[in-house]
Image 1 (spheres, rainbow, N blue to C red):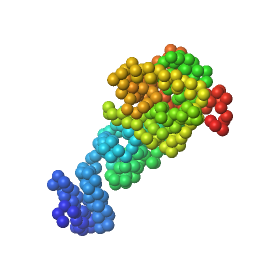
Image 2: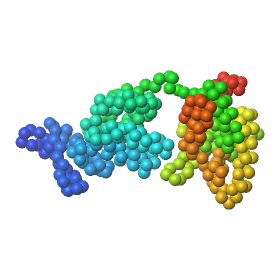
Image 3: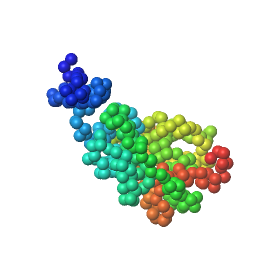
Image 4: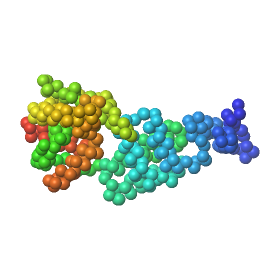
Length: 334
């Protein structure tokens, strides 16, 4: 059939294959044996079938990464938060350094230089480690699509994380923060983050229906996400370990009940402008969800005012064991 390709023996003793591309041009491959040429031709045909037009190896890493991000977004194969992280690492760290390198010419040296350059530029090791993970994931897709013979990132050790990078508040610092947040509408959010160790998306996606004040439990069964301008409440958190019922400390139960009363007053005040489609515990004055970028900026403002480290929301979880010990909770429960 026309365009299917053919393998033939050349005069110089090499086997060659040719295939008509979608643009009408002819693409040639060659190898020392008939089997080798046929395998190269099969890969070429596979690339075309998967939507990759042959380009004589000129495809750059930047071009592939753009396609990879777009493919994940359309297919929905990854969590929105993961896609957001991948897109950020590609845009801010990988493409500025390796965008023009041909995908077929990428080597372990390129990957190692990317890591060392970022660390030398003062980028945090955790961010560099996530950048490595992103590049590794992208190149693994390229390998499975047979665009490259191997994942060169697999030949490079990922950046090590120093133990002291696991930052946390001391109990005294955490109490200072909560004292500074007193009477703030989001005070209970930070209190819950510090005492239960949940992820930001799980806390912001908490619904009143997940709290049992009688049994003193909280079910972690959803996480708040945002895609473009649309709010999503995903029913399945990050992993099975996250889908659990946690004990509700008495002090947090009291704070949540007070928060519910304040939210009811806000609902009455907002009237028809109230817009809470999920029944969330933590909302803006009009009932709409609160996003994590807003909460972290708010927390950093308070941290600067009382001169304590500006941790990320995720790092608040590292403070939880110390907080629970200070509250007298048994270590086995923690």
